[in-house]
Amino acid sequence: MNPNDNISPKERPIRPLPNLIFMSRWLQLPLYIGLILAQGVYVYHFWVELVDLVGAALGNQAALEHIISAVAIEGAPRPTKLTETTIMLVVLGLIDVVMISNLLIMVIVGGYETFVSRMHLEDHPDQPEWLSHVNASVLKVKLATAIIGISSIHLLKTFINAAAYDPKTLIAQTGIHITFLLSAMAIAFCDRLMSAPDSHAKQSH
Image 1 (tube, helix red, strand yellow):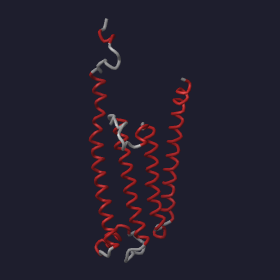
Image 2 (tube, one colour; image 1 turned 45 degrees about the vertical axis):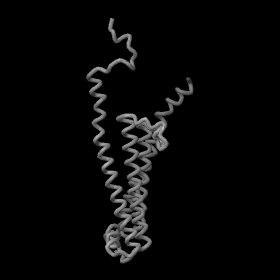
Image 3 (cartoon, helix red, strand yellow; image 1 turned 120 degrees about the vertical axis):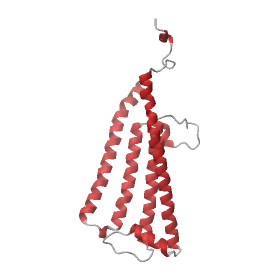
Image 4 (cartoon, helix red, strand yellow; image 1 turned 90 degrees about the horizontal axis):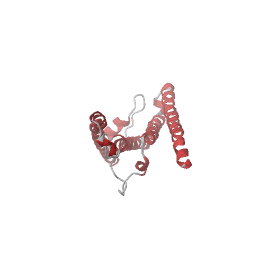
């Protein structure tokens, strides 16, 4: 008689090879730490652009030159002062940084919670609402939605300077954005099909 037969599955020790495979999930930890460092770079970039925008609005010539260089497009007239369009392009760039930062947070927090280890944030007042029911499928849908938002910002920046782009570029960017939309819809549809059997099983019980 095997002495392990009387041990419950939760108390039974994991065999060495399965334990090694299971522990290999911690190899992802440096990847998430790297994304945290990338988040720091985006925060720094955001504040540099914001300080330059405020400085340009207050008449700082060096800040104005930096802002104009950042938003200038080859083939388009180069502005000589801070215009509404220039401000709009800079603000859209800041929004783009924020949305990419949100995407990073979803990947870092959701990915770590799903694939590495539980954070036990159930009673934390600042726990993100989406994290309470996060899994691989939900994470894919949310990431796809975030990518659509980022694509929308880039497409809007292109349309603001539509005169500086040839029609092929405009059509290509619009087509890429539509592809992102269709991909997100397909991911959400597949997730709904996969979750439907689970919901029916729960109702039957």
